[in-house]
Image 1 (tube, helix red, strand yellow):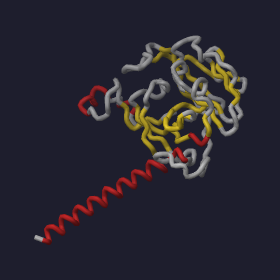
Image 2 (cartoon, rainbow, N blue to C red):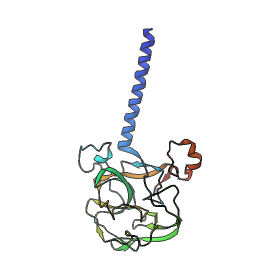
Image 3 (cartoon, rainbow, N blue to C red):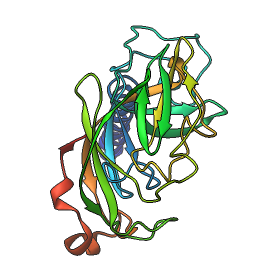
Image 4 (tube, rainbow, N blue to C red):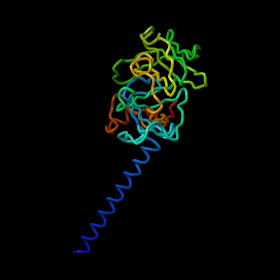
Length: 248
C-alpha cells in the first residue's frame, strides 16, 4: 500500500516539476524572445486587421523595463539597445499611460520634421512617394466601418513600402503642423490614416524606452469579431491567407 502511495506522490511531483519548467520556459520566451499580441482596433488597416494575432520580437530593440511582465522598475533606458527603423511596425507603451500597449508604424526618427499636407506624408520637407492602387472594405464590426476606402502604396526614403487608407478626404489629420521629433523619441502613425490615435494626436512622441518590440509575423487570424476559442467557427471565419504572413 505504501509503495502505491509513494508512486502516486512521485508521479504528482514529476507533473508539478514539468508544469513549473514549462511556465518558466514560457516566461523566458515571452520576456526575451517573442510575445504574442492581438490587434484590438482598425487603426492599422489594411496592413493589420482586428482578429490578427502577431509575434512581436522582444530582442529587436533591446530591453527596457517594459519588456518584462508587470514592468518592474529595475533599470532605466534600454540594454543591448537596437534602434527602430523607419517603416517598422512596433508595439510600444503609451507615454501618457504606460500600462497600455499600442501598435503603429515608425515614420519619424529623432530629429525629423514630420507633416501631413493634403493627405500626403512629408518627411523633412519632402513628400513621401504615394500611388493609388485600389480600394479596401473591412469585414466585421468596427467602430468606424470602412467601405471601398482608397488604398495608397507609400514608399519611405529608405525603400520600405506598405499600404495605407485614406477613407475620409480632408479629415482633421490630413493637414497638420510640422512636428519636430525630439532626440531619443519617435513619431508613430497608423496605416488607417483617418482613424488612428497616433503621434499626430494624443499619443505624441514615443521615447525609445517605451518600445516593447517589432511586429514580425501573423501566426493566427480570424474575422467577424470571432473568438479564437470558438473553434466551430474556424472553417468559415479563419483567414487562411493571412496565416504565417510576415508583416511589412
